[in-house]
Image (cartoon, rainbow, N blue to C red; front, side, top):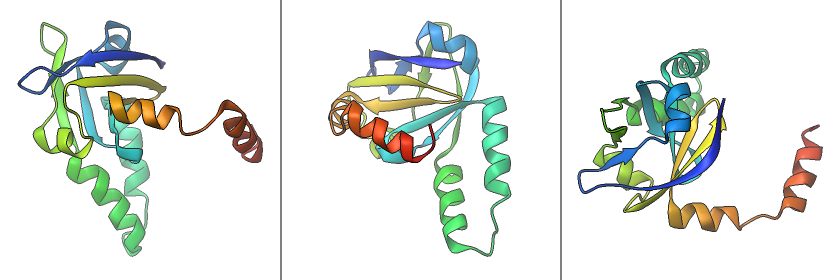
Length: 141
């Protein structure tokens, strides 16, 4: 299970260290793509296959389904962790997520989210724990 919050810095080439605690679960090779809310998503190869199957099951005749699939597939790239524990994030994905120097990596159970530190901290403070609890109750949790 991918959990936790980690702060790291991008190097000049756009490489980021994968936290050791996440590295074992995500694997040495994984997929990174555009995520929701302005972050990036990273999936282990097995989780990507599960996600890919869900996208494939969407009706191609539905424009929203095509747009949703296009969003994730067009931004996707293979990543591999090097001997120093780093992986490269392409320029287009860094631009999408507004990643500059300081980055926050969070484990989200079946995926990792990669955020600009500034965006993460502004998102983190947008909603209170009480508001989250109320919304979760409406979802039956």
